[in-house]
Length: 138
Image (cartoon, rainbow, N blue to C red):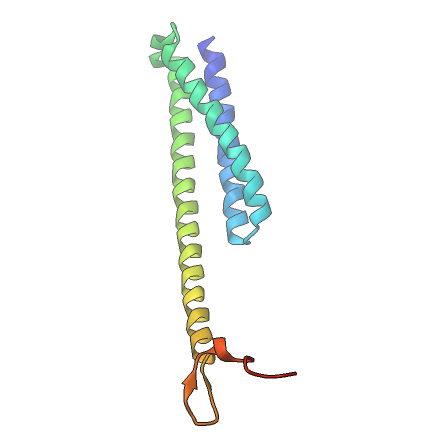
């Protein structure tokens, strides 16, 4: 029973690692459609992992996790989990960098918009762009 839970947990962590790798590629290529699909699948996988953790925690055979054959698998699972955490942190950094680029680009666009919005009337007085096109009779 507990060996089956560990096998399933390991499979789910391998799936999560694969999804995180796909997420990294999608982030690097700005593939929003893939990111949405990956996020949905990641959420389901994480829910399954959490349920398996709960089952392992409440298992009557929990003490067997320290025995020789299962200990190796537990160590492999911990290593997979660490890889997932590292890759998830990397993806978080990529997202933060992308958000910062978007923020900077938005500021540049806003500055350009403000620079180009000034107009002058026939007396040389400066007016904002909101007056452009008003006052004309067709």
